[in-house]
Amino acid sequence: MRVEMKQIPEEIRKQHKEFREWNLVSSRNDHQTIFKILIDGRHPNAADAEGNVLPTLVYLAREKRPQFHHHFKAGAMNALNGHQIAYVQYPQHFNNLTKNDIYGNSFRVARKLEFPGLDANGGPCYIGTGCFHRRDALCGKKYDKTCKVGWKRLNRREVEENATVLEETCKVLASCSFEQNTQWGNEMGLKYGCPAEDIITGLSIQCRGWKSIYLNPERESFLGIAPTSLLTMLVQHKRWAEGHFQIFLSRYCSLLYGHNRIPLKLQLAYCTGNLWAANSLPTLYYIVVPCFCLLKDIPLFPKVSSPWVLPFAYVAIAHRAYSLGEFLWCGGTFQAWCNDQRMWLFKRTTSYFFALCDTILKLLGYSNPTFVITAKVADEDVLRRYEQELMEFGDSSPMFVVLASLAMLNLFSCFGAIKKLVFNADHSEVSDRFGLQILLCFLLVALNWPVYNAVFFRKDNGGMPAPVTYKSITFALLVST
Image 1 (spheres, rainbow, N blue to C red):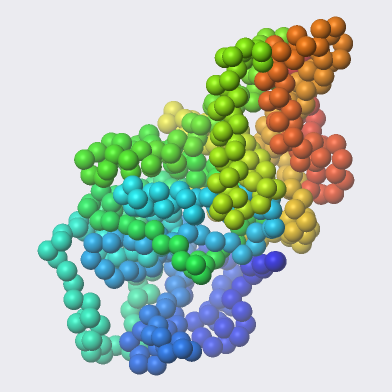
Image 2: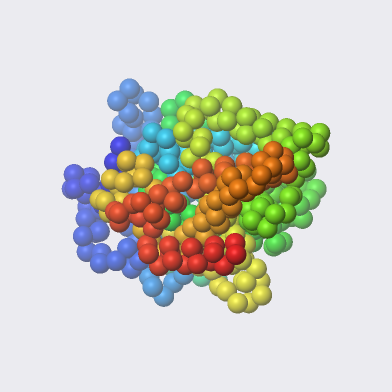
């Protein structure tokens, strides 16, 4: 399915004059507040085709000016009426995924297993989209079970202002200057100053005594557009990992900020995401060191004939088998699982590693990371290759240099292993000493097949750029010789 993101449809623009204001806007980063009440929930005719009462539906584009810093998620909020529940988190679904989910964007296991687990451990985190908030909780109020608002009574009251008056009144709230010298972004609303401000916002709400719940209805509730290129996906995950790691190193670390406020199991659950960036180091170790030692005739694992190999074999086989069974149970395919494992490898060696380095450099005062919006619009060639499930490598990015360098190092290690097996008189001794290392290198080569295809065989614009190829081969040769 091809999803195009261009503008509000013309027929919708004609129905609402406020949408026509976009015709006068020259830049999406410099425009006035555009506000429209599409459905007035107070109106007796606010119902769907089946007669179900509809809530108030508002379209809002906050004012943006170049001289004012823009907090990106501060407008993606929905309101929830309730008492103890602060927010209800829905999963994010995507309507442009390929059959085998080439970039692992579906979050299939997270939707069906991980978030229900968070729900059982104290409540899901706020992920920045697909969420309904209770206004009192979002505005910084602590939970008090004695304070309950009579929403039915408030909803029955006579409201004198019509929709037009309300629209003009509410535009002030969406102006750039409304938050200046206020507690918004600190004690009220989203917490500013972190790429993962949604996470610390949800954590702070839970630490004030509120509860959160996870809801995954059979009908997909919130649809989005997944990244259609590899670099876009990697940059998105770098931003997430960077924000999470900044949280772990800040006063909002769940183990510190949540101490005696939320359950210990929920504190630890937050850490699984907060330590994404740090997890890049052991992954890089298992990718680089075994292959390098194989080239230098240094065995790292027990011999295949040794009983001490059984714990390694058990952990490796059990973990992969469990992962595959989990993925298939959640409705995935074997090919999609292979793609998911490949993206797991790519993200840990690039996105998470770059996030770790940038965060450390920021702490040392050498870097000032900025919020990067994930691009959702791609040209026709990129979309065509995405639909054909051809991985996109057409950018000269440092991330691709790292990916290609590691892939070439694994390939050279495999050549070295084959050379040992072919030219060594005692083949059984080689396979016994280096069996696990050789198997690991061959598995890494299999996962990196799209990289080799982009480097050596592809001639389209999605292939690996020549400068990236030269740098990666040179680096791998220097390391392996």
